[in-house]
Image 1 (cartoon, rainbow over the protein chains, first blue to last red):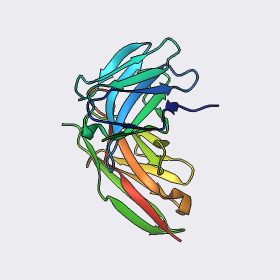
Image 2: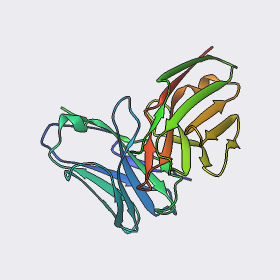
Image 3: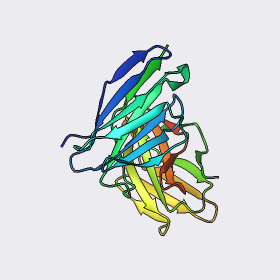
Length: 113
Length: 111
């Protein structure tokens, strides 16, 4: 069975640009969560989506947005990139929004120069 | 506030020895904890979980202990192997219902 997949694997952007990251959950999973992991730290919760609706949001600015599609895949968008947005962006899927057990993808490494 | 934190940033053990990774949490309302293993270049991998109505849970070569009195949990790895080398995170459910991760402990296994 395929696990959580994310694309692209790596990405280099310059300050002020916009980026879109993509995630496909495990088949049968309806909830997707996004995390930011800065080098040397644990993942920080950004968003959770379930059935195309936002079910939770972490302490991130409005430059960060996300959406979930009918096939349960998801996109994370970041506008007006800052150097501090450089991080590993992780997507995790779970059966539903109330399910604590989450399965992570390999992440997208974003570098902002 | 709510937080989880690991006691040591790095732990070095000899191959074959047992490893113990510790974690403290401040949110007394947290009723669920997960240990994740993250290898270089990969996303976190689920190892084992425990609910607050339990004190101990065992998996394959791993044991998690939960002490609610002192708000402390630990991950024990038996007969540590080179493949166990990774960063280990404890995560708890905060009052928002979302996972809160600690900063991680790097486990180094010496041959």
